Length: 452
Image (cartoon, rainbow, N blue to C red; front, side, top):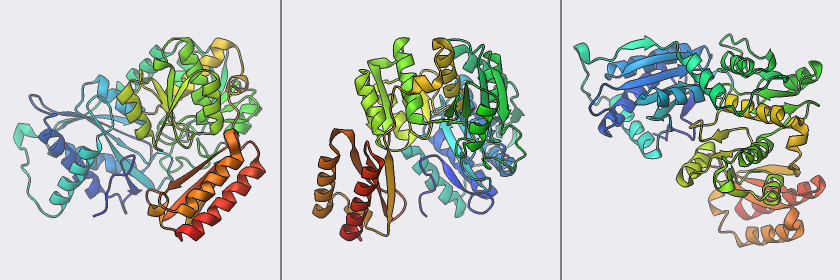
């Protein structure tokens, strides 16, 4: 069996790859693995279960709840809430386990199961591996001790989760948003009710789009992966800015008052300066990934902020932050982690903090984001090559060295083997887009000849 867990839980087409039987089995396995690890020792275990609005989330939620309760875990169902809300509630309620059903920015037919450990943190790799092993044992017929009588888990709805999460978001804001008109694109997703409520309570005048989920329209031409509607709405309503989430609202991208996109790198830059000014940017350090724009790195150097670069994936950003106690990190895609207030990327929190900076300074988002200049970035995927030999090819190393000398200090080259496919990603940044395209094209040709 191939590894079920990816970088963000188990995902697949609902009812084809990710079935009710699998969701139930994974939940039982998770309960057994955590019990074996001592997580439940001395008390009756409790799990928080939430989902995004996908139609398939309804039957998958039922399967997960059934699995957990059959394994003796009490379940608090929080309903449709963002992934970071489920993580927050898992922590604040002292639950032993959190489960989120979502496929994030994926199209509606997909869904996913994501587990959180006590405190609302993502499960460690070794626990995910153990869950897979136990799941496979049960799936192939291995018996397990089933509780009976009073030992089975009890299930109840926890409707207070919505207000507790919104109250938390408001409580951590450094200032109110009075006087700001903001367009919110909720991607017909998990933040469709939470995000407008939070921004309104913070004082903003809000206009919402993509906030009518029907179970089928999540991420459909809207949200952080489709910004055109948000750009048009910001201009139409004369808004100060626009905020876009993805389906489970762990991401945030933005649009300035002119309709120009503000990506995750720019958001990180704005928040880094704001947090340093308030004395909460620990070690004056921000964590990003190796795919962050070179313009972000140059801006942080100019502003005297140290940049730590992690592997691609928000879990690797989070690991770096937790290991060294850093307060801010994120990705170009809009996963931004503010570790003092969240254990995972939180799109609503990020959007609120970004808007708070606009309100506090009286400067436009466009002006604030101009602290960094996005350098042209060209990415070419080179398929059907031996990705394992990227670090061994002398021919490739020579070509990369020549490219780096040509680009100098205002450009860079990154060759990254895909983690799942037989391809190599060639990324080139330069001050001039034509130069970036030319260098990337040459390197792609060398990758084909050297690794093909």
